[in-house]
Length: 129
Image (tube, rainbow, N blue to C red; front, side, top):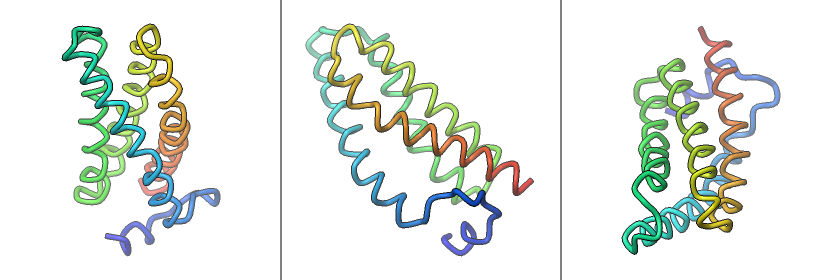
């Protein structure tokens, strides 16, 4: 898996492989805590399923990215999935803001990292067509 990824043409600015683990080790706990809080708010009828939906879709798309990239090795599918991750982050932030500003703020690093990852994935798709 790593050998295949190393063989891809990448932009000069692409992060080193070790950076991914470091960044995700910070972002995944944030995603987990925020989603637990959203689930509790949903269970307590503080928010409707419409507010919670983009969080759940985001988790689905987030978990789909790794298989699309490393199992299927399909750059276009990976690009589509990462765009869906990015869109559901923004959608989640917009929906939760009136109910929980801290969840909105907590998702900012996630938004920044996935924005970078989306540009990187676009580059990978383009450079490895």
